[in-house]
Length: 84
Image (cartoon, rainbow, N blue to C red):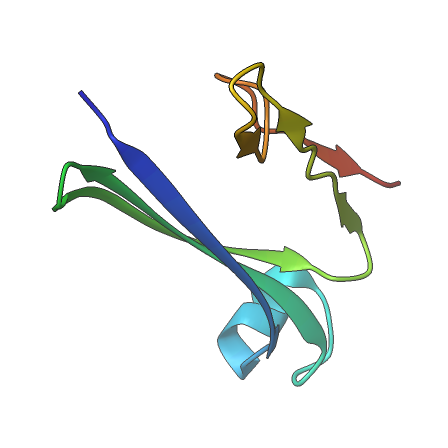
């Protein structure tokens, strides 16, 4: 059973290859999302995704569970909003 996951979101400049693939200028700001999923203490999944900073808006929703614990999203949901 998966126990927890971590997501790190940071701004990163586009290198030449990434800029060409995304049709943006080299050095343009990207949102870099690095995700790590664990089963207990073992890493079972790693991901790194680059988003054009001028085209995305992320929604992070927090809720307080009846136990008083604040969770960053509804179980089973992760969403992002694409702006055209």
